[in-house]
Amino acid sequence: MSRQVTPEKSVYLVWLSVAITFCWPLPANTARKKIVGMKVLLIASIINGCVVILAMFYWIRLHLDDIISLFKCVCVVLCLLQYVVQTIVCFVKYDTLQRVVDEMMGCINEAKTDEILRAYASRCNTLYGMSLLSIYICGTSFVFTPLFLPNPFPFETEYPFDVNTTSRSFIIYASHVLAIFQSTGHMCLCTFGAVLLWFTAARFECLIGELRSVTSIDALVVCLKKHSRLKRYAEEVVSCIRFLVFHAILLGTFVLTLCGIVLIINSPLIVKAQFIIICVCILLEIYLYALPADYMYDMSMNISRSVYDSMWYEQKLDLQKALLTVLAFQKPIPVSINVLLPELTIRYYCSYVSNALSIFAALRTVVDDS
Image 1 (cartoon, rainbow, N blue to C red):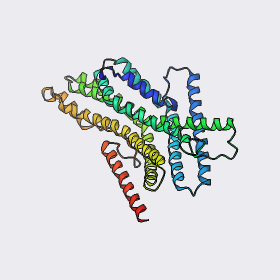
Image 2: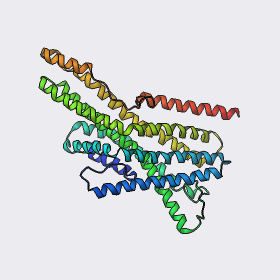
Image 3: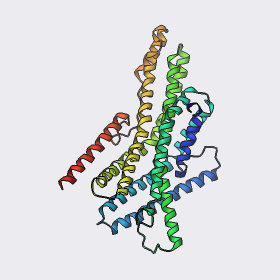
Image 4: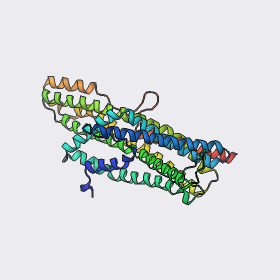
């Protein structure tokens, strides 16, 4: 099974999962009309999401006394808000995303027999495949909500006009379904960012192998030029996804808090099931960002370590001095934002989950006391 996994297939699976978001950029050589058309679809998806969010705000205004439905509605609004914000970020970062994706696809096509890329694809295949499947199952469950709850539409919405006519009802239902699958696709957007991070980590690993075998100044200069280009590429990747990560963590914190309240108080079983699925998907989304970010951080750090692990003591004095310079001035590349987001690592993710469980425990104590 693992022999059949290739980088091309892995990237295609991720593209398929996020295609409905229109956030995966078209190649640079694409006709201008197609690029303009995709940007129009991006804007249309933002408008559709905003319309659904406004209808849900109108419902909230009319049903402030129904606590359970209110919390559920707020959670859904936050999830929809995530897809609107992420669409805007991808729209703003379109040119940079296009550059990094084109470079990734070019490297993958040129290195079809590269064992390191194949090893990364095999390593991540099961985890990300099951994650994408789980997220889409979660999204699809909301499409069939009207079958189990007394709601005509998947979301709790109110409109300042009659929606009982067949045509209006169909249009609203279709708008909700589109918003559901686009929101689901945006939760899968974490795999898009993860693919870019894994690819960058793989390139660092390839460069580490080259640095360990350096035996001359000329070969070292070539490696340093590759490292300089790779570092710029990694910084571009981080600049594209760090605000997506921050937004996912910020909204995830609010949603997990609301989910904790709903799970603790008396609420219908199907509602609790939906909120449990939402909690799992949020924690999974952040984990899928944290895992490759942590690995890329380590690989960028290992560049300098690889120089130390080389046979530097057998080289000429001028090469030893050059290697010492490389060792002294290398810095890792983290996924972070000054003040707002610390370095995204597995350790940070573990502390995030621990804090979420502490919040659940505190909420449980408050509810029991009241």
